[in-house]
Structure formats: structure tokens, C-alpha cells
Length: 165
Image 1 (cartoon, rainbow, N blue to C red):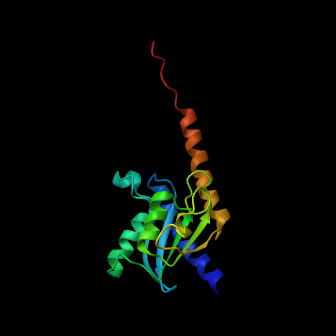
Image 2: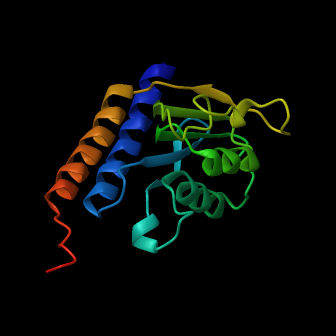
Image 3: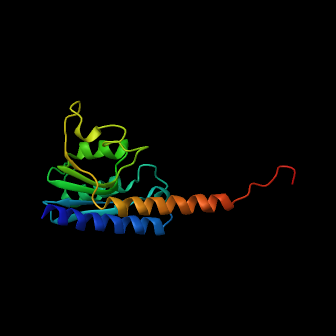
């Protein structure tokens, strides 16, 4: 059943998000699955770890999947992401020609699949994919909210010294 399969793979992406958070990264995870059953890659954000602004979970997973598969075109692949991909990641999904994108929570500020832009199914581009939003949405939203809540709390504890001190 498609819903059970999607929940299973999204669970794997969530585990990668938790691992990213443990490294001090924004907790976003992604995995790439071929033919609905074979895991090609799973990754969490690595922007801080790698000192690389492009090392979003989706990009890292796509790179690994393409190397593993032996082709940058992943036409039978499904990408699972815990959060709606940004413009960079959505563009990479189009370039990789993935068949389907499944994501957990929407990203109202930076989401480029439905929230701000429609990159993944734009008729202006040379590839469109099937999109399934909202898989394990509550869990995906919660991990992000908890991360940023903790970060704001930590930032509130920082006092900037007075220049006269």
C-alpha cells in the first residue's frame, strides 16, 4: 500500500533529520528510493558540518544516489524530504528527473514546491514530477519547531556586552 510505504521511507528521512540535529544542523532529512523499494541514499542537512551552503539534505542525498545508481538522471526515483524543498533543492529534483517527490511539512517561507513557487510541476520547465505532500506532517513539523524554539531560547540567553564595559 502506497501510504504505508511513504510513511516508512519518511520515517527513514526523519531519522536522518534527527542525526543532523545531533550534529547541530537544521533537522531536515531526505532519502532517495528507486523502484519504490531500494534505498539509494539517505542524508541529513550538512551545511554547517561541510561548511557548504548547498549541502541541504536533498542535495546530499541526490548526489549520493546518482553516484550509487551510476546516472545523474533518477527517472524511477522517489525523493522523501521531511520539509518542502527550497528553490535550490526543487531545481535539483527537476534536473535529476525524479519521478515523484514526497514531503512532510510545508515551508511557508522558503518552500518552492507549493508554498512560494511551483518549481516541481511548472509547465515552463522540461520536467514535472508527481508531488505528495503531508506524509508524517505533524512529526516533520514538530522536529523543526522544537529545534527553532530551543535555538531562540539559547539565543535569548546570550547577552551582548555593553560597549562601555
